[in-house]
Structure formats: structure tokens, C-alpha cells
Amino acid sequence: MLIRLPSTVGLILTKYLTDNQMAKIKITQIKSVIDRSERQKKTVQALGLSKINQSVEVEATPQIIGMVRKVNHLVAVESI
Image 1 (cartoon, helix red, strand yellow):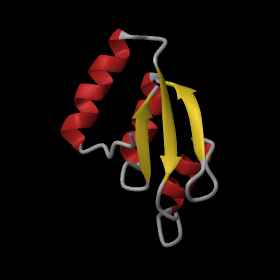
Image 2: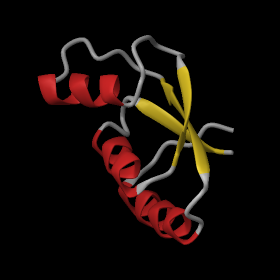
Image 3: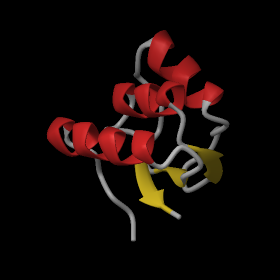
Image 4: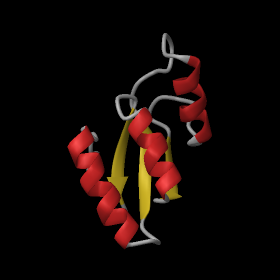
């Protein structure tokens, strides 16, 4: 189940994931980075994504959650 992260849901997810330190999330790129700012392109690349529909599984650290919030319109997040 893929989840888009509106800002309020992102805050709730952050609270949940910080309580469960070893939680993993699956991040999937759902939109292209063409015509996006250079900062957003680098953030998507730092998450390990380079193509649409590509997915990565990462630990849900505060740094990763922050990056996901910055590009939540380009990615979908799924709890594992």
C-alpha cells in the first residue's frame, strides 16, 4: 500500500517512526524530477532513487524522514 504524505500525516508518521527506531520504510519515486529545483533533484538522488517506479528500502531515521518531507510530491512511502 503506497501512502502520500500530507504535512499532518508526515508529522504523525515521524512520531511513530521515532518511537520505533529500527522501523524500515519503502520509498518509491512516482513522479519525474524534470523541471524541479536542483535541491529537489539532489534530495531524490540522495534517497537512492533515479527512475520513476524505482523503490528503495531504508531505515526510518529522522534524516530520511526529513528528506521524504521535502520531496513528498515526488515519492510515495510505505511502511514495512
